[in-house]
Length: 435
Ligand code: DLL
Image 1 (cartoon, rainbow, N blue to C red):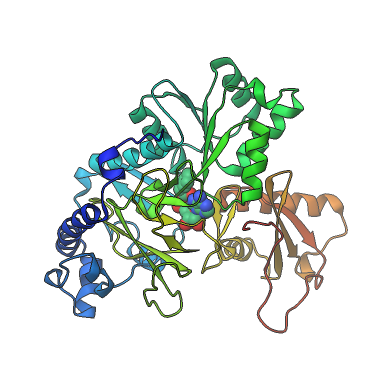
Image 2 (tube, protein in one colour):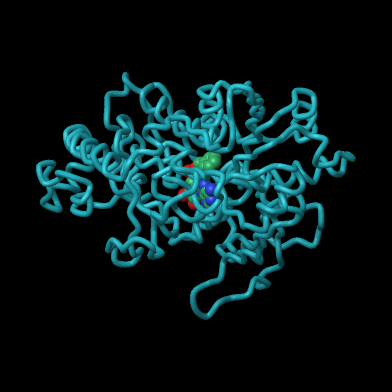
């Protein structure tokens, strides 16, 4: 018997959802036009006024927003309300140019947490559950989002944050955690660690996991389900739109229901910007229908996926998105952290290295690895191993500060990184991320 956190809206008829969306979009466009100069200028340049937007069908008239706009408007240029009404920021790691800083009013946080609560209830969560949240807490949205959702459902919440696996397992066993929230790669690692410690899947009380923030395959799902003895649910979101809970899986496990009363989704051709018909693969674009502090309209996620309105056996009526099948930019997600090759290059240049490097990403024992081969300039070459090791350590530390994760640096002799005759192949990603 399926459970819903907000049954009325989660199972509302198509007409009802459209009515809500149409009502909200008119108000939201007016709100943005009146309060966000940056977007008002984009609308003016396109010759669109709030009066032109009478329903969600008119959204296609609006200009897009991209990460580049966030960079230009950083930090306050897309704020939709006075700072005094904001109570929180969340952010992604990275340089100023790449870092996303999102703002929230208390109302924005309540809505975000409700979206996460819907995901937890869809995974079978009730106030009798013990929900162990091991997404990172702090600026990353994973921990705070699922933590808030877990409170709303009334679960006993374990705000563990990520890492310290031995302690995670101790709490899990001692307190009888029933729901696990973390990245799929961390879930797989916890599964392996449990086995290494001599536990069998039936020794833990877990029944469900809510895993997202990075791509994962059906094969990985099956392996996590087996190692932990649970049902594994996917959850999607991005800092720009609030965080996790933009969409979530139900027991059918055939795609994630988008919370359509809060987010309007479009699929576009990433090259032309043209809106594609339902069922076609393209870039996902979101319009926040009711965010007050950071109200992004037509935000290009760069995630490639497909939408489906096929009837779902869970009774939810909200449109489903497939797992993201790739990206239309060069962002990599390594151990749950968003990394751009340009950030790595920026550190190299700042530390005095030439831009001759190669980034090698792999997944070993379900954990992402990041190695960077960097060529030494001839004048810095040394045959003293201790010199080289000290330089590697220094560069690793500079990378960790910039990226939020630590790579393994391999300094190479001059001219040893293959030169390219065309577009340089900077990244070799050996992971299998998509089915
Ligand atoms: O990763 C929010 C989140 C936290 C989602 C916890 C789910 C669970 P960002 O750090 O801003 O936000 O990264 C957003 O991560 O554009 C996707 O490319 C990717 N992503 C998020 N969820 C999934 C998923 C959080 N379930 C970017 N599958 C997005 C594949 C995902 N990719």
